[in-house]
Image (tube, rainbow, N blue to C red):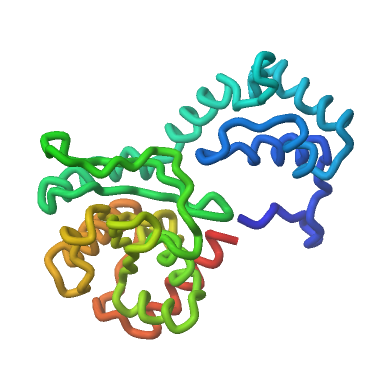
Length: 260
């Protein structure tokens, strides 16, 4: 999202301390949950002493934890509390629940909801069939590749990007991908709230099980489910249900506005 602007159009000044603290926290990911002070210092581009001061301040408020035995930092317990509060504030997670559960029952595959965090899709809800012998495990909080995941392609396409592939995705109303994890396939569609693109809903399964033809039952039910969710969230569907250029352009403008 773009930063708020003053009445005169000038962006407000950024507090460097807050910006640096946020940057340090962002360096921790699912793939890199532990970092040394040297790693943080190199990424922050500051002196070791300055980085240490920030790390100490973040430790005092519970946002970082330090393991003395291994000399590594991890995110602290306060992060979990903040993440829980943030997710609770996302109305779409609660509203999407019944739709996703119903879709799981219809397609017998894992259904995933992702939002855009400014740089990439982040998984905020996962529903699957717990009775299945073999299940696809997608972790809530996982950050997906912006360029290659089906969800990332949806956000790009419905923001007016993606080139020729983005045009195909907008016309089909969905994106597919089978490259992020070998043997696993995902199909994804956009979810709108009011006039804004707010999420991507996806079906995730094996490449043998997930149908990628836009005319297939699985793809049609995914689009229909996302459409019903969008309606409940306040998206007004045009009287003409065909994907006309005008409809696509309207969605792209709204998406660019919401993603900044």
